[in-house]
Length: 313
Image (tube, rainbow, N blue to C red; front, side, top):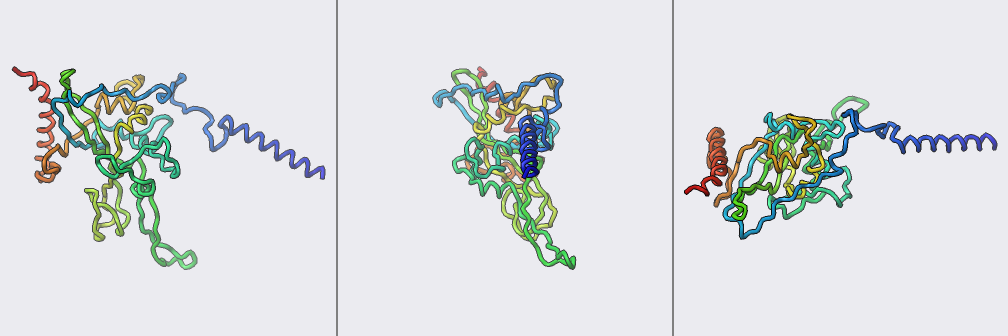
């Protein structure tokens, strides 16, 4: 009986010790300290950053507005601060990882404080958590092997979740408008659409390069593109404002993704669609890729010169 009491006392003491370790973050599951990134006490961006509000605008003051759709290709060198790091390092995260964390698919039952994703471009129909999980994963067919004989006995389904580093571009819808009260030309991003590029792993069901359903005869291993869904940009901004981005010019100058994209617009892109009566992309009426880029530049120059043309006498 005495031995049993001593054993019980020892277990309680061990539990207390491990509990103390958990409290101070010294177990294998908890970090022992903050990431070793700086030689000074770093203030978290999220502790003081909120999105800067847009200038107030009245419909009566809008003399002119124009809507365009553009693609931000993360393979362009200028856009690398939006893509890297491919894996989270301390407090440094990519734009895709920031969006994935905001969506928070790791907690399927969580609804409060989660970034919604919409099924339509107008951002009026939210995608359910179940459908969104399907958009962020792929079902592939792999052979099932008999452990005793080593022979293939059939095929089984394997769910493969996409990683943030597989987002290689973003489609952005933005509106340009002229405010007669301030005599300025403004631009605001309305929605953003992440595009995943992945290697085709199954011939049962997939998406083609344009985001639609593909044929069963497609070659296995082909690089495919898949749309995640539409994100209402004003709802994304609070998450972007709390994430610091790598500044290629000066690491000490603190910039968030909201500063980089919303205000500085420090990225390169090309227009693939403008507002038109036919609701068609540039690729729908211009087949040659070189001519498509020339048409994109023409629309860009039109927007650049509009403000100065308004003040010509």
